[in-house]
Length: 72
Image (cartoon, rainbow, N blue to C red; front, side, top):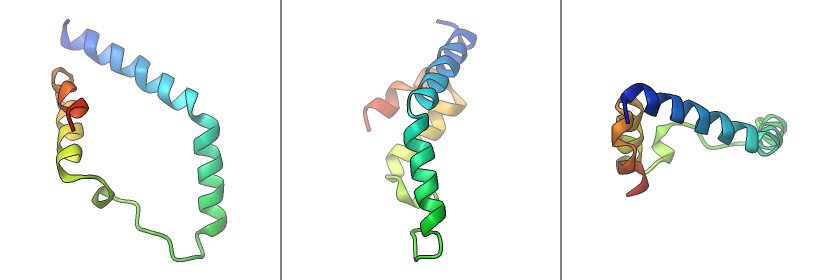
């Protein structure tokens, strides 16, 4: 599979993920907004396992390495 075809497949699957989970994200965002005055955790890459974060970053740079994300 060519890099272009992998990118297209990723684009489709990413769009499907966001569409499928739209209500969940909207509800979570609404809850976040109503609670933001409370002490909430900082949302940054420190929330992710270091190895997983590295695998995800590598997969975005080179889609042929996406299987590395599944193994984390």
